[in-house]
Image (cartoon, rainbow, N blue to C red; front, side, top):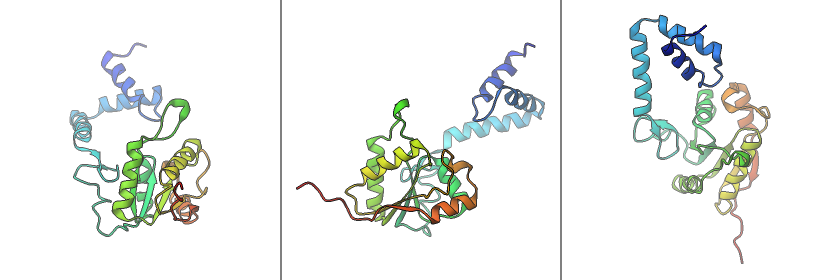
Amino acid sequence: MVLPEALTRLTTFLQRLPGVGEKSARRMAFFLFQQDPSFADQLAEALVTLRRSLHPCPQCGNLTDGDCCGVCGDPMRERDTLCVVESVEDLMSLEQAGIFSGQYFVLGGRVSPLEGEEISPETLERLRGRIRDLRVREVVVATNPRIEGDLACHVVVDALADVPVRITRLAYGLPVGGSIGFADRVTLHAALESRLVVRSGEASPGPD
């Protein structure tokens, strides 16, 4: 069966969404077509607004439509604990669980040598600067428990080798090969409470 060009085009776009196959995309396309025309208009407006108004928080990398995100702008948040995550999705999962009351830093990428992905030196320098500015005492490395997350953790630890800060990492209460974004509150809470010490907090001695 040959679908109309407009429906085929929409289905193709919807297939690019995470976890959406051809059949699911086609069902979504038919659903959108069957709605009141105002629904499509409001959806299109929401997508345009999303792209125009949201941008990374200059302090932590979280998404915001203002000068800084809600976490950085909250005076009640702890300032001496910094949680380093790979993505904004991971940050939002931790926030939704309501188990962390400190500050965040989003790496905005992962380490995957086979795919040529790495964390830029500029990002790591911004992390060092944020630790200095907030006078952070503990950095919680909340990278995902898989190879890329392990590599990202090592990169962060190496970048902070001369920074006098305690470094911990989420314990493996999270399933190996899993993702923070799909973990429930109990799993996230157990992982955060039983985090492991990566380094005690004293800076590494410099060269003689």
